[in-house]
Image 1 (cartoon, rainbow, N blue to C red):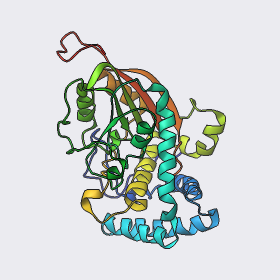
Image 2: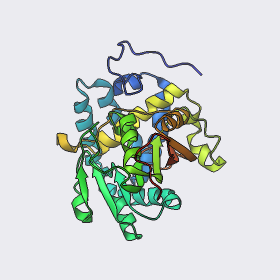
Image 3: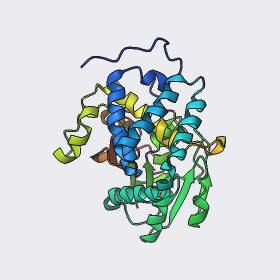
Image 4: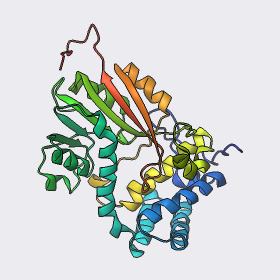
Length: 320
C-alpha cells in the first residue's frame, strides 16, 4: 500500500493530540481514501433509502463541491442542498431512533442501578430509552437539541472545556457516547467525568477510533469494511475526518451557529485511549470492538467500560 502523499499546503490547525486537521478537500487528494469513501458511501445511502446507482451520482455531486469550495461552509450548504433535493433527509428522524436503540442495547449490560448522566446527550433519544427502562437520566450538552425539550428530562447546558456543573461523586453512571472526539479538550472532559462519577461507579465510553485491523470482529462484521481496515492508521483517521464532517455538518447541516455540532476531530487509537483513561484514574474493565456499527456514520467504534478507581490521596472517594 502506498503512503498518503502530503497536501501541498501544510495544515496550520492541529487537534488536541497534536495531529493535523486537514481540509476536506485535502483528505480527498489520496485516491485510496476516496475509494474507501466511495465504498462506505453505499452503506450510508442504502441506510437512508437511496439505491446504489442513484447514490453514486449524489455522492459525485457532493464531492465536486468538496473539492472546489472556497470556504468549507459552502461545501456543507451545497452538499446538503443536494441531499435535500433527493429526499435523503426524510429518513433521518426514524434512523435517529434506530441509532439510539442500537447504542442502548450496546450499553445496557454495563449500566449499574442508580443515577445516570448522559454527558453530551445530543438529540436525547437514548436518554428517552433509559427513562422508559427504569432510569431517571440527567442530560447535559454544549448545545440544546430541539428534541431535548420533548423528553421532559432535566437538562443542563454546558460550555466547551468548562467545569461540569455537577457535584463530586454525584452519579453512579456517566455516559460519554461518541462525545470525546467532539470535545475541544477530551482529557479535561475525562477529568471532570471522573470527578462527578462515584468511585466504583461506571463510566461508559463509545468512541470513533482509528489504527484498527478488525481482528476482534467476527468475519461477517469484518468483511464489509476490509478496504477501510487495510488502510494505514493515518489514512483511517482521515476517512474518519471525512465522514464525521459529512454526517454532522452536511447531512445535519444548519446555518444556526449555536446548533452546529463541534467537529475538532479528536480521534485516537484504542491503545492511546486506554493509556489516557489510566492516567485519569480510570480502570478499563473491558473494551468491545463494535466495528462500523452505525451505517449512517461509517466510523469504527469501540465501547470502553471504565471504573473510577480509588486513590489514596483522593478526598472524593466514597463507596457506593
